[in-house]
Image 1: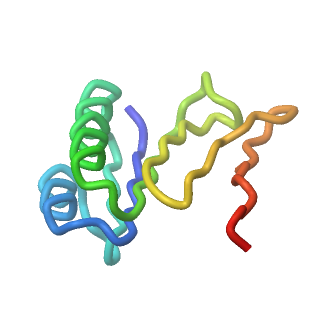
Image 2 (image 1 turned 90 degrees about the vertical axis):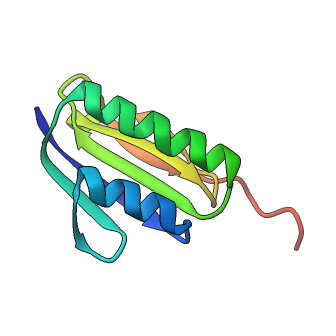
Length: 102
């Protein structure tokens, strides 16, 4: 089991209530669990993903230690700004699309 962290920004209260029921809110919109197993982590992410698809507002980031991932860090994101994580030589880089409405 590994430490998991979820950070939310500009999401509705149902996300906060749900996350508070399974994780400790250590600061506003920052949730941690010292031993969240992979099954529970996946179920939590599935709920967050489903709700975010229904109410696409704000953003959510989940991170946890994963020896199989780049930098031994598992990362999942939802929301805006849309960010694609790219593995470049063993490092995570955030790729954002260029603004087209300037």
